[in-house]
Image (cartoon, rainbow, N blue to C red; front, side, top):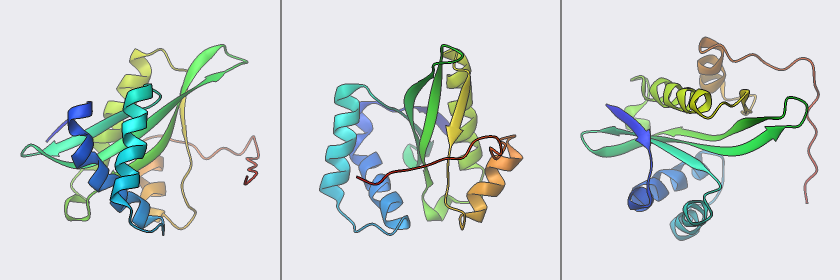
Length: 146
Protein backbone atom coordinates (compact mmCIF):
# COMPACT_ATOMS: atom_id res chain seq x y z
CA UNK A 1 0.00 0.00 0.00
CA UNK A 2 1.23 3.48 -0.79
CA UNK A 3 -0.04 6.93 0.12
CA UNK A 4 0.77 10.08 -1.81
CA UNK A 5 -0.49 13.51 -2.75
CA UNK A 6 -3.08 13.22 -5.52
CA UNK A 7 -2.80 14.93 -8.87
CA UNK A 8 -5.32 15.90 -11.50
CA UNK A 9 -4.68 12.56 -13.21
CA UNK A 10 -6.39 10.89 -10.21
CA UNK A 11 -9.56 12.96 -10.55
CA UNK A 12 -11.90 10.32 -11.98
CA UNK A 13 -10.94 7.67 -9.41
CA UNK A 14 -11.16 10.08 -6.49
CA UNK A 15 -14.53 11.38 -7.71
CA UNK A 16 -16.00 7.87 -7.42
CA UNK A 17 -14.79 7.57 -3.83
CA UNK A 18 -15.88 11.13 -3.04
CA UNK A 19 -19.38 10.27 -4.28
CA UNK A 20 -19.41 7.23 -1.94
CA UNK A 21 -18.19 9.46 0.89
CA UNK A 22 -21.10 11.83 0.34
CA UNK A 23 -23.54 8.91 0.26
CA UNK A 24 -22.10 7.79 3.62
CA UNK A 25 -23.19 11.20 4.95
CA UNK A 26 -26.74 10.72 3.59
CA UNK A 27 -26.31 12.81 0.45
CA UNK A 28 -27.73 11.66 -2.89
CA UNK A 29 -25.29 10.18 -5.37
CA UNK A 30 -24.11 12.72 -7.94
CA UNK A 31 -20.90 11.59 -9.58
CA UNK A 32 -20.79 14.52 -12.01
CA UNK A 33 -21.13 17.10 -9.22
CA UNK A 34 -18.51 15.25 -7.15
CA UNK A 35 -16.12 15.32 -10.08
CA UNK A 36 -16.79 19.01 -10.74
CA UNK A 37 -16.26 19.90 -7.09
CA UNK A 38 -12.92 18.09 -6.99
CA UNK A 39 -11.91 19.56 -10.35
CA UNK A 40 -12.40 23.02 -8.83
CA UNK A 41 -10.20 22.08 -5.87
CA UNK A 42 -7.40 21.05 -8.23
CA UNK A 43 -7.89 24.09 -10.50
CA UNK A 44 -7.89 26.56 -7.61
CA UNK A 45 -5.26 24.76 -5.55
CA UNK A 46 -7.36 25.32 -2.43
CA UNK A 47 -7.16 21.77 -1.08
CA UNK A 48 -4.68 18.95 -0.75
CA UNK A 49 -5.88 15.42 -1.38
CA UNK A 50 -3.94 12.37 -0.29
CA UNK A 51 -4.80 8.98 -1.75
CA UNK A 52 -4.07 5.44 -0.64
CA UNK A 53 -3.43 2.88 -3.36
CA UNK A 54 -3.42 -0.88 -3.24
CA UNK A 55 -2.27 -2.54 -6.46
CA UNK A 56 -2.49 0.85 -8.22
CA UNK A 57 -6.19 1.24 -7.28
CA UNK A 58 -7.20 4.21 -5.13
CA UNK A 59 -8.98 2.79 -2.07
CA UNK A 60 -9.11 5.82 0.22
CA UNK A 61 -8.50 9.56 0.46
CA UNK A 62 -8.20 12.52 2.78
CA UNK A 63 -8.88 16.11 1.81
CA UNK A 64 -7.27 19.02 3.64
CA UNK A 65 -8.11 22.70 3.45
CA UNK A 66 -5.70 25.44 4.52
CA UNK A 67 -6.45 27.96 7.22
CA UNK A 68 -4.46 30.06 9.67
CA UNK A 69 -4.18 30.78 13.36
CA UNK A 70 -4.23 34.55 13.79
CA UNK A 71 -2.98 34.27 17.36
CA UNK A 72 -0.03 31.99 16.49
CA UNK A 73 0.40 33.52 13.02
CA UNK A 74 0.93 30.03 11.60
CA UNK A 75 -0.86 27.77 9.15
CA UNK A 76 -3.51 25.25 10.16
CA UNK A 77 -4.83 22.38 8.07
CA UNK A 78 -8.48 21.39 8.30
CA UNK A 79 -9.12 17.71 7.71
CA UNK A 80 -12.51 17.91 6.12
CA UNK A 81 -12.78 14.47 4.52
CA UNK A 82 -11.48 10.98 5.22
CA UNK A 83 -12.90 7.98 3.43
CA UNK A 84 -11.85 4.39 2.80
CA UNK A 85 -13.70 2.13 0.40
CA UNK A 86 -15.80 -0.39 2.34
CA UNK A 87 -13.89 -3.40 0.97
CA UNK A 88 -10.60 -2.00 2.35
CA UNK A 89 -11.63 -0.91 5.83
CA UNK A 90 -9.89 -2.29 8.92
CA UNK A 91 -6.64 -2.80 6.99
CA UNK A 92 -4.80 0.28 8.23
CA UNK A 93 -5.63 2.45 5.20
CA UNK A 94 -7.10 5.32 7.23
CA UNK A 95 -4.17 5.22 9.65
CA UNK A 96 -1.67 5.49 6.76
CA UNK A 97 -3.63 8.35 5.20
CA UNK A 98 -3.66 10.18 8.53
CA UNK A 99 0.10 9.64 8.93
CA UNK A 100 0.85 11.06 5.47
CA UNK A 101 -1.39 14.03 6.15
CA UNK A 102 0.26 14.68 9.52
CA UNK A 103 3.73 14.54 7.93
CA UNK A 104 2.53 17.03 5.34
CA UNK A 105 1.32 19.30 8.14
CA UNK A 106 4.74 19.21 9.76
CA UNK A 107 6.50 19.80 6.41
CA UNK A 108 4.36 22.90 5.82
CA UNK A 109 5.11 24.22 9.34
CA UNK A 110 1.46 24.02 10.35
CA UNK A 111 0.72 24.56 14.01
CA UNK A 112 -2.09 22.00 14.06
CA UNK A 113 -4.61 19.90 12.17
CA UNK A 114 -8.25 20.28 13.14
CA UNK A 115 -11.16 18.03 12.30
CA UNK A 116 -14.70 17.20 13.27
CA UNK A 117 -16.80 14.10 12.86
CA UNK A 118 -20.32 13.01 13.55
CA UNK A 119 -20.95 11.94 17.13
CA UNK A 120 -22.32 8.62 15.83
CA UNK A 121 -19.14 7.86 13.83
CA UNK A 122 -17.51 5.76 16.54
CA UNK A 123 -14.95 4.19 14.19
CA UNK A 124 -13.57 7.61 13.20
CA UNK A 125 -13.61 8.87 16.79
CA UNK A 126 -11.69 5.80 17.92
CA UNK A 127 -9.10 6.24 15.15
CA UNK A 128 -8.56 9.91 15.98
CA UNK A 129 -8.15 9.21 19.69
CA UNK A 130 -5.67 6.39 18.96
CA UNK A 131 -3.58 8.84 16.90
CA UNK A 132 -3.43 11.40 19.70
CA UNK A 133 -6.18 13.77 18.58
CA UNK A 134 -7.85 15.39 21.58
CA UNK A 135 -11.47 16.44 21.80
CA UNK A 136 -11.54 20.19 22.26
CA UNK A 137 -13.01 20.99 25.66
CA UNK A 138 -11.71 24.58 25.75
CA UNK A 139 -13.76 26.13 22.95
CA UNK A 140 -17.35 25.74 21.85
CA UNK A 141 -17.89 25.37 18.14
CA UNK A 142 -20.79 27.23 16.56
CA UNK A 143 -22.20 27.06 13.06
CA UNK A 144 -24.63 29.16 11.09
CA UNK A 145 -26.38 27.54 8.16
CA UNK A 146 -26.75 29.87 5.20
